[in-house]
Image 1 (cartoon, protein in one colour):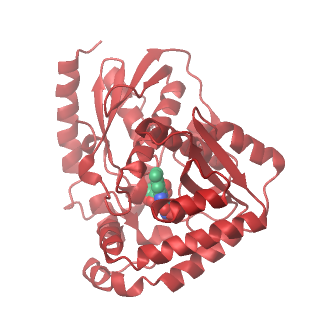
Image 2: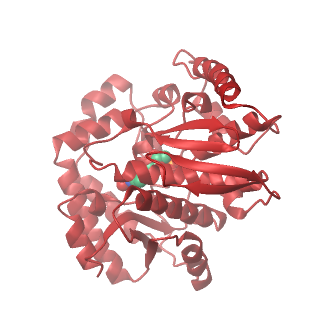
Image 3: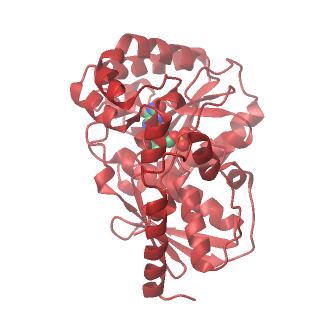
Length: 364
Ligand SMILES: Cc1cc2nc3c(=O)[nH]c(=O)nc-3n(C[C@H](O)[C@H](O)[C@H](O)COP(=O)(O)O)c2cc1C
């Protein structure tokens, strides 16, 4: 067993080598190579406990995060992994109270727990101690699950789906997997109910796109071409949303001009109307622990969906615009609660993948 100091030294050495590997000078590292390196299961079995912990962190980084900020840091100790917020990766305009930041940490937590179980480690997640999430790991029988198997295949699929409903059995399975402690899931499949949500998506999106601060912040996270996406290893790669690539200088110049509320609203209308349903995650209380739990529930939902070959994508505008959120809650009949996350789902094609930073860049 390694002591904390040894852990830290080994992590630092590994980090140094990964940072070099992730440098923007690696022009030859094509987008396709990056995708196959990132979105995969373990290829070399970890040789020791620290290597295993790093591998669990790698799985955690394959989780969703708002704007793909990857707003997480990981600390490795003997039989313990802590997930901390990376506050330099906040998005204060779209997420002023860090709700999405903590939900994103919840997404990473869920992937880590699923990967630990498949690798013979039972997790106890402790949200009680300060800002960090402590995941205690105890040896147990290795149990792989469809959720674990789905980790490298899940993606936020921002395109039209096939408009077909899901079976009751599939809806039940999604609901059972995604419900958590203090977090409830509303599944809307009725067309009228979905149209009501669409009206709030359109209102929220219009307010966001007409807000120069929102557009400025969003632009800093857009990756306009493969090279920029590979270099930074984070952010929103244009092709993942079905948009063309551009030279970075041109993208930066044109972004504000090309982004129009009208065309985005038209796109969201098609996307939502082609979906089989909408999942809304609602936690009992407005605390960081509940937001983390909501993130865990979403991540399980998305992994279960992936296991059933069902696509998912967020449409969070109604919960992001603070002035709209209470009206949205009232329209859902939950005026005493804060709806956390809005996700559409259905069957459809896959989209180009988003990228990740290397494990070494997120271990502290
Ligand atoms: C809390 C949270 C909020 C998000 N909000 C949105 C959103 O409103 N619209 C959207 O298209 N994607 C949203 N996303 C998805 C992220 O942009 C996505 O996870 C990230 O780009 C990485 O891509 P991937 O999920 O395909 O791995 C959100 C993700 C999280 C965790």
